[in-house]
Image (cartoon, rainbow, N blue to C red; front, side, top):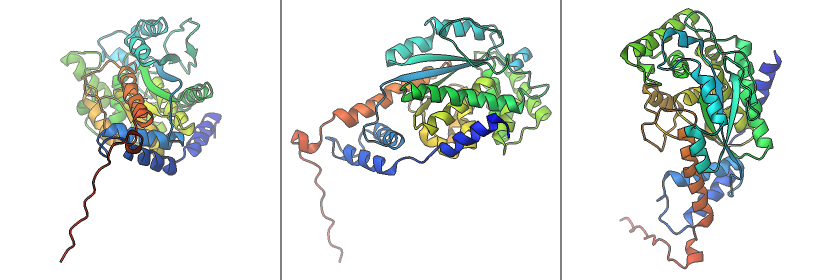
Length: 362
């Protein structure tokens, strides 16, 4: 077993169940607040699950971050994107200088943007960039595996290491972001590989491709599956044959965060494909994941259904970068404010609900 395999297996063994006692205490607290029971819907469910993750009713997020994993994709040479591959490093520089959509939304949420080079095709020189490059982009997976199995495991470990480093620095809430021209094609290939769905039902318009490029995208996925024959029962096999480096790193981030009992908000289509990989490796990871939005990408609804995640936001976003996930930070923060700042019926001097006794049956 390689050191990468050992690291992944160690983390899988460290992912524990939610704290049932903390969840019960959180539910009891919510039921005493000045509102009808359950009237704040999913916000109450979030507060309970956050307590289960943190192991305390008073789960809080002193520091939050969106982790933007960046990598290039060899399949771009098949004409599957409306933008050229050089946009990946250009956008990474935009993240690092604070000019992207994710930077604006992260500032609003009081979150930091952590940008990680896990596989950009060129080197980028910037002091804020986290350099953990596994290789210079994936290979064109219509002609063979996107990367080696060892590289997929190493990319998983990049995500695990980033999660551990951030947890050590006091971050208690993470969001998944990604940058990689061509990554919605990889996400569609992962979805098709795991489910056997028709590639035409998995691909979407991504960066805004036209009908011809959409057809090329479906054909690229179809060829990738035929050439590589990924084993849906082996998540790492699927990942190394038709995945992406940033997708692998995001899956690792989810694993590492779950092992450290840090909740993760999942963004759109590529990030959700990473969540599918993570949950196939460790089903318990799902307890630590919070969905954010329903992407406009065709395959995203299918992915969310497979994961059993119901996103609260439906705003037709398809940008990526972690933008939808950071918007959902506000909902988790709201859940904690409700738990901490609302008065109980006793504190406020408000009469509680009247429970009528059931009439005696004859």
